[in-house]
Length: 191
Image 1 (cartoon, one colour):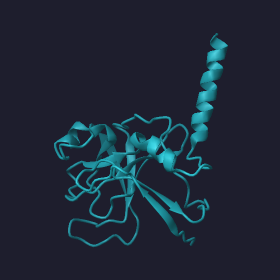
Image 2 (cartoon, rainbow, N blue to C red):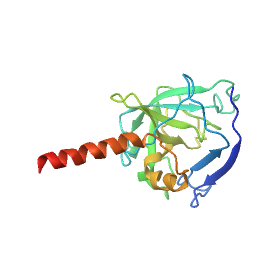
Image 3 (spheres, rainbow, N blue to C red):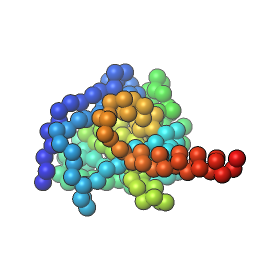
């Protein structure tokens, strides 16, 4: 097992514990991760920065409580869920939330719970087979599987993430660069 030491945590400057907005940070580690069959990158959604991913299946991962007041997970938990209309979460959230920066997720008789916050909300592109980090789990104090959970939408924070990142990062931007090249090639052919 490879251990990484955290060398810096960059918290969003607008983070406020009283809201669910801006609950994001970039973590810098001392050495790069070595990818293998169990460890790999999750792409950032550069091609879909405004996509709400509504009706898409996502996977949420966490080490939180197994149920309200219950025990902490000793193995990584995974929930298959669907992104639902943000209106389903508006009635649950704080009135000062910026709903354009949130994902509303409903699991199939499962949900996130305390200590899952900060975990990933992942979507696998059926065409490219790449996994994308589309959300970050927000605190869910109810742990009620019948109630949708509110999660941060990563696409709303891509500009901020890029400003914090090291200069040699990739985060699957190759796909974005390739798409731009194809579009500019298409433009030149059409002229």
